[in-house]
Length: 327
Image 1 (cartoon, one colour):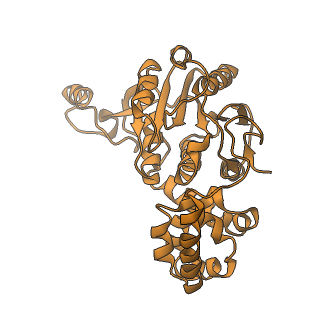
Image 2: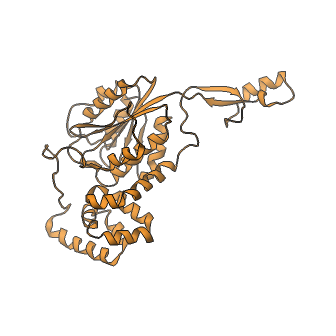
Image 3: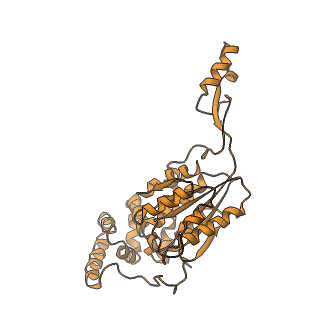
């Protein structure tokens, strides 16, 4: 069953509707069908920028064309899937889930540090074939007492790794349609890949209701978490305060000393109360702002939450943004 807000709630779309008036909908639908029959992937991709819902609705009727594109141009097909994923029927999603997972892993790993993101207090220690930055002051002091250089007289800067608890608070309202859903999945993957087995992370979904996808104390395979995110059916209004309350509760469940939260939204709140008082209660709350919406409001939340405000343009901005939040 698709995750998200149950049907029937106020402001929730229970069935798909064309993004344009019906009189203009049928001609573009016929054009899309014609291009699909011709196998013109680039033109379909171009049309999906303006007619993402209609394109997504039509792709499920052409599984053989999609299969052919996987063989001839998998990169462009991944872009098309990332843009239309929430509009595809279940059978089409099942057929091409492996491509989406592959794309999410590739993008998430594009900025992955060699040994994960270093966290904790910076220290100076003798060189042991690790550490890239030399502590010049400390090294020069050692050279005074030991004029003949030796490995143990060279000091390097290093960060002592501390356990971290991180919670993603993920907007699942109607604004998450299209490529924003793919960005959310990449954000979750990037967070998990930058943590190690001693760290904890959780994933909270919100719109008008809250859904805890993964508790900070729960062990769950990364691909299973990504699949859960991709299974979201975005809809409903945006209650950021409700999402922050759920994320704060999850943060408090952890006994790890270093705690941080990352709100992923477009800042377009249209339900619930003021989230700013809740944001102040976080030890650190970063906001990754998705394209569109109200970036100014997202920036206010980040400022009150003592965290970074990071606006995104494309999905390729996500890994760097997550590394900055965890740094």
